[in-house]
Amino acid sequence: RDYYASRGLGDVYKRQYKEDITMAYVISDECVSCGTCESECPAEAISQGDEHYVIDADACLDCGTCADACPTEAIHPAE
Image (cartoon, rainbow, N blue to C red; front, side, top):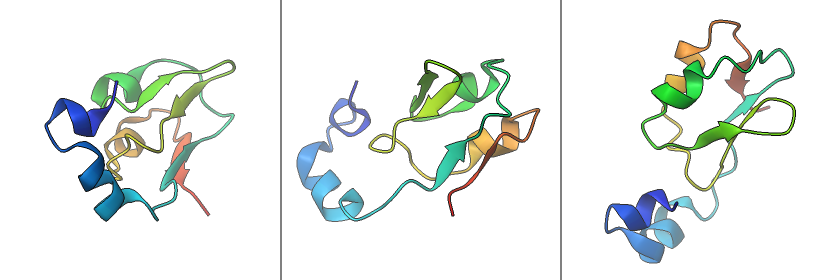
C-alpha cells in the first residue's frame, strides 16, 4: 500500500520531497520479531521480512517512532 497515494499526495509529492532521500533507519539482526515497531509505525512502513522486520524506504516518514518503541534497540539510524 502506498502511504502517499492513500492520503491523496501521490507521485508529485514523492518526486518533490522523497526522491533523493535514503533510508534513515534500519532494523538490525538484534530484532526478535516482537512486532512492536510495526504496530507503532504511523506510516505502516514496517513489515515482517524473511529473518526479521524490515522498513519500506518509500513509505518511511523518518520520524523515529519505531526506534523509540523497539525494546531491543534493534532499530537505529542508517550510517
